[in-house]
Length: 411
Image 1: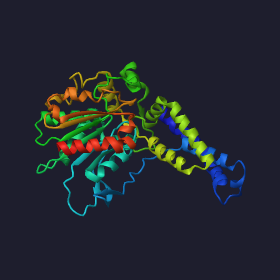
Image 2: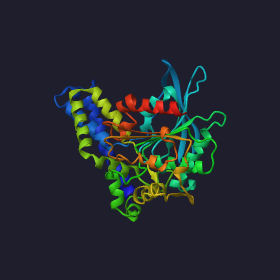
Image 3: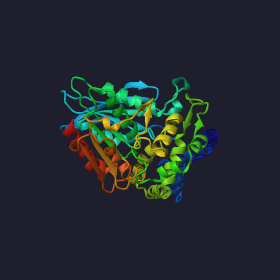
Image 4: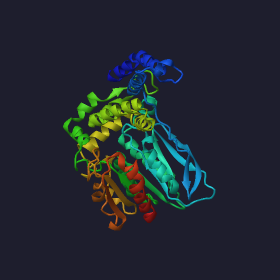
């Protein structure tokens, strides 16, 4: 019902949006006489802000067409190498003149509401010196019911399949980077492969800002999960996809609810950002306005999560803390991170992370105690929030070089 109400209010806003678009044209187009009236800029800014607040944001493009390799511009093409019902494995192919022995990187993007393109800056910085592959998760509302459910165990299976696919037995050099939520399923996948005797485990695991042990430095995200019973999430946030989508009747955690949750964590910050955007438009500061649009085009583009996976994660990761307690089972097999011995581990946290608190990712070292100390490292990025550990200046100037050096050292 909530999902249908959301769709209905968007349709009801349709006439208002048409009027706003017309007004923006009348008062902003340089060929319109109305654009030279004293109130033109204010009306144009108001209608522009209204349109941005009420519009639907589609999945953004990667917009990665080239990179620099040894100082030379090289063309890049994002190619879907494996298309599964809930995920596409995307390879960023570099048009290299000659073969390079760059480490292969599987970048596991979070399935937590945003599209994988949120890691655009992560990919850009890795491309010059790595062969980059990314998990591009599919919006659950676009997956027909015939594809079946998608549980946390299925997520782990996907990661295991991708690792196997990308491992070259003749020259194994695969490195896995997980950002935020996938730190848990990635650790499970690597541990289970070690338990099953997989002959060529990943050379390195880089875990960034994830809830390995959500008991440490709990944030607002963690507190919500512990304050509400499992039944509350099942009854209040799980919705069925409306008729207009391929995934009609699939149970999902809607992206618009996740987005509301993101905004509710820092309402003043978002309100001030939109007020600043309005003032930039009034002042004719196109550069600052464009930066705002670029950020919110990505931030506001959300996807639906499969209900089974979402509820499994709430229960196992945020309520039962099953992994750090040694009680997490994937398809009746106990996950034993202590079986990981041949994969180096780098954990990264942001000093100011308000989504995965300090110590939550570092907990991986306590679980993977059979990895030699000289092959384990933990880093806390000063002044970095959650998004700052994989995008922005701190990622580019400090964190990415550390990731690169760690991979080069141990791969």
